[in-house]
Amino acid sequence: MMIPRMLGVLSIFNPSIRRWIAAPSHLTGSKSDISKSSQNTKSPHYCLSTWNIDASSARPVARATAIINHLLAPSSPPSDIVFLQEVTLEVRNHLLQDSRIRSGFIVTDAEDIAAFEDVPFATMTLLSKALVSSPTCDKHATIGAATRFKMPGQYQRDALCTDVFLKPFARPSSEMDIQEYYRLRLLNIHLDSSSSTISFRKRQMRYVSKILHEKTTLESGQRSIGLAAGDFNTISQDDQGLIAKNGPVDAWLEFYGLGSQGSIWRTNKQKSQLLPGRLDRIAMTGGLHPLEIQVLNPGFIAVPGPGMEKDGEKDHTSQFDSMASHHLFTAASAVLNAAKVALGPSAANTRVSIVGALSVLKYAPYRQTKDVDIFLLGGNLKRQELKRELPRVDSNLTVNMEGIYGVTYRCPVTKKITPVDLVNRRLTKFEPHSKILANLERLELPWPTRDDVILMKAFSASERYIDAKRDRDIEDVIKILEMSPGPLLFSESIDAKEKLAFVRSLLPHLVGNGIWSEEEWVMRLGFNL
Image 1: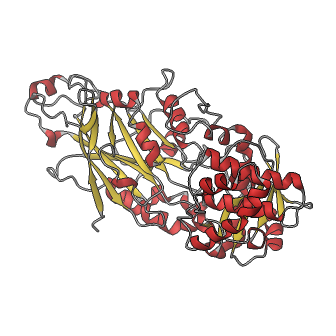
Image 2: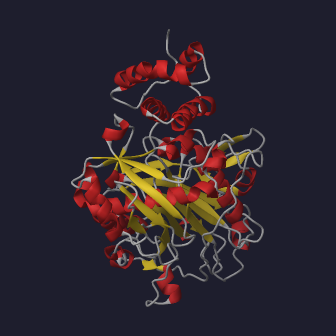
Image 3: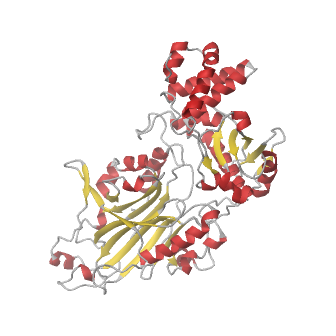
């Protein structure tokens, strides 16, 4: 079986021309230098760090910066190899600007963005320059190719492969050449998410094993060792044995013993469909052995606030990602995950979107809200029935007796209560930009577009009988247009013309109750008089 692949390069930053360029292999050193570098017969030790940095974060750049700060802190073990998953194009661009990465690492995907086209995020690998910087270093290695192996699945995932060639662990002859090196194959992987894609993860693990054991194009006698690490999304019982069934060794089980499955995710043991477990794993071939395993414990990683650090994002978004809003995201994720389970196969026919005040804060985080509204369309359960089913899936949810179609989420850690209402087209009068429920990634929130939020709030204001609520809706529209300016286009909607006409019909109400003149409203909305 030939696995489709996309060839890439490893790049190094050249400060003299201030550009990323193809990294040299460092095979140009003399054989005598290489021989001298091999006086130590002890096998080298390498530190690998792997982290899914969460593309769904409201501030992915700031979050990635905080994670890199943590990994590269003087108090952290120096990372020889760094695997990152869920890297957005924006985050990739920011990482390539980081002076520490420029000076200390060789990276993938620095010279083109092919891996980020048509996908919401991708993987990136960073290799410490210490691996290849000096032939006299006992870790000295020679870098090979960087390749993305395409894998079957629902989310267009791949296995990012980098080959590193290590000198033999015993003193070689002065005539040693590359065929006598060990090939260390490093696979950075992110397997398909959700319980419904277990069949794809089984196939993906077969691909991973095949890639790890793929014969080198060099002499057949060259020894090959390797590992695959990253987000395995081991969320079901069927996932637990996939590594062993396909040949590699689970590093955690080798280090701690076969009776220790361990928990590095959802360690608070809350009751839900997603039990504590190890979503992130390391699968090794023979010849590699774990010497130490450290769990980078979850906590509140400091996120730069306005003016604290230039991270490529607008300052106002920091308010949206503050801990004051975090419980809202958690509540929304809990309801969506429970709804996916409760709806079963019909989740593939259900569209969802975050609406209401929380969607306003996505584009204009100028105020707070205490509840969450989720738009649903499709599915085989009515909202009233779904409301009763959700607590049966997640015990942190209870039926909200005050809301007709709502539930209440109680955070098992902070004990904070968050009401979550289920709404449909009868309330919004149109379908906002939405996503298929079954396709949502872990912790992913389906946001409407800015234009849809403006339309929803403008319509809501026109239906209000209470002045204070009507004024708040109009203020929401004004703040969105001020903080996230631009004409209404509804570019992601197939019914853009109808939506534009809808907003235009509401213009007299906006002018009559807002602080702007008709000319100002027309200019802000991008209309023609």
